[in-house]
Image (cartoon, rainbow, N blue to C red; front, side):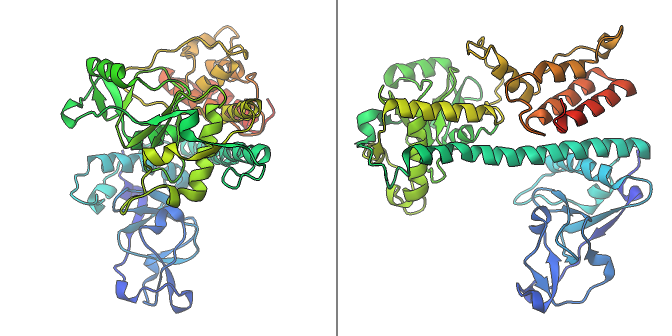
Length: 463
């Protein structure tokens, strides 16, 4: 396979004098530093003159060579190229956009293999030695075009997710007002009067294992609240887990767990029956919530209160931390239960339009329970599609007039309620899943072409 330096011109940045750097645009030329690569703009300027070889233009491919080896196209206008940033200029024998999509994976492999003491450094030797698959320009262009479509869909999906995430907040204020100000005059009760507030039993360092029952710290609880996938790092033995549960109980569905440092309101509503335990003190536990109170409502009240008044509620010199005794006394407005449940139903419906919350990826997959929801399992089909779980039918099944499995997959999920409610929404997860299925089974030009045009119709909202 050809090397990167055989296909591209690699220009490394110049060592500009840092003492001359300024933030005043009138006093110099914009300077691309390593921190500017991903964000695509700079706030640093240099008055030094430099060779045209170090000039960066919009659309140039840049690579950060320290820390994370990031790749991005520059969109900040003409600028100068600083040291530890390099510019990649493809020659005529490689497609620019194909190379742009290829480089992150290649650089990630180098990053994972690079030893470091403080910060990882990408060497010019390793960068130049990257091997690029030797495929035709036509095939490169086809791959780049497909990935452009998927990238656009992902960007659209992220925008939709951001708007959808705001829906419950807006609905909450509409129904109940700001819980801090309480303009509707709801009766307030201390949190300890409507739920138990505490933490777990102490687990000592020498009791932690490399396998067993997952043990979550505040960091992992925050990730669960965000819906971010992760692999648990710490575990305890099943026997120890059962002893701890006998003494302090265990979290149940509907309980709330939150890091003790929680200014951003990352509160996890427990939604699993899988066994786990958590760190005492660093994770706070709200359990046995009163029958006159809905867990989802309490979760959102706390998010509003933390966002508005965290510095007053939390205490500490280095980090502002929530204390159990303060949390117990926190006043919670209590509207009628039917209103709380109506809001919870709205928040739950809005969450179905978002990607399914991630689960910790442990060594053993959690058992799946049959869906008992009145939707008849359609919501589970949506979540399965988003996880990329598609039938592994080989392409040979397409013979005899039968559709290729990619088509069958698309149409088996298209009828899930709200799945294609707007152009680009969720269908990208189906597309990515189909790509994985096709890669696993192998394929030929006809199914690929059918998948490609079917996915374009899907993105356009025409199916």
